[in-house]
Image 1 (cartoon, rainbow, N blue to C red):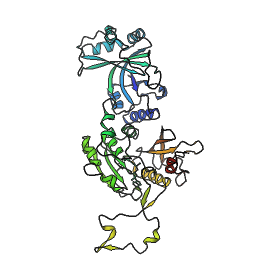
Image 2: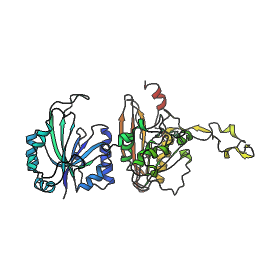
Image 3: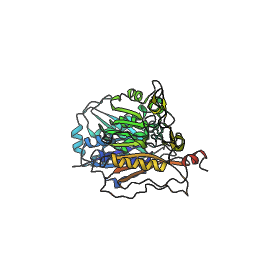
Image 4: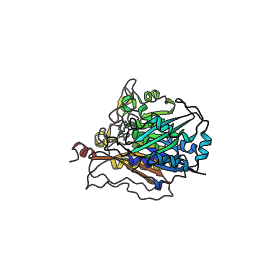
Length: 437
Ligand SMILES: C[S@@+](CC[C@H](N)C(=O)[O-])C[C@H]1O[C@@H](n2cnc3c(N)ncnc32)[C@H](O)[C@@H]1O
């Protein structure tokens, strides 16, 4: 038998919210949710689930949700709320089940602040028909009962005055967001970071949409300072990263990617990072990679380079140069030549690599920035064996970036492809630095 639950979500990154909920539901085998009832304009979503265990599994990792509650009722006034709770077909069962539990009441709100307006003691008194006999315990009670009020905010920063709706339920699971994930991974407090580091909130959301799984291998081929490795490690994957720029990989003194993992108490999740050109990939072909999550170079703060010579003629006959009786390229401090490479070709390589290395249904997720020009069409890279599952947009003023998420469907799937095509007509770096004018 299914039961009703209330999801209370954050009203930001709406483009990513549904993708995160669907991906986590799929990951944890939650099949009873009717996503056709999901409303992007509302922070609330009433769903049907088999039991609390499902609700916990589904929401404990969510970043764009606040919590999930066993649904007892809702109303546009408190009188209506109380009537609805008592009319709930499960009311008698609920009452009997929690009669002797220790408990407390909590208050939450959307779009307004109930503190000051709501007399909380009187409000709690108004629930006396629940006839709870257990002790009130503020610390570690058996159950937390929550009143959530919805206000219409007067503007982005001004709280509304009048509650439009109120919900009542039993807390089943607070989300990862409410359990402190954003504070823990806040870049401001991270020992090793750089100009390319990706903010905590959306890197964790990316790992959820990519369905990073505990005990599996996640690879970031453009690891930089390791922001996505940290997100993958948080969800208990074993993470490995590579980057062509050894300085990023090595860090400075005690500021390293490894030190970040140590700080977070997650050293066990960190496999390693290596300096390597992605297009000359040295990971053994039988090394299993379950998920790929990354932020490829777009030439804004870092250049797109691969191993090779811009002008190969210059090196003819110099391959065998020796220093101190040893081939120059065998010295530890040898710096190989690099040449510029196109973003289109790099993304083609990334999709091809994912199609060859991911297991069936494994996910590739990466970020792609685009200029918001009306007359330039955004062409999303496609590979015949990869199904494009999500294309989530984060808008900035004159540009946006997208999280593209693909599922490896294998040779049996023949979707559209645009490999080898020139997709990005205008160089994003040039457009970025000219202010998109
Ligand atoms: C947008 S940054 C990624 C930043 C990273 N997410 C972080 O947390 O710092 C892109 C990275 O790709 C690296 N890169 C550029 N060309 C590469 C190549 N051919 N192979 C591997 N890495 C490359 C750059 O050195 C840069 O660190």
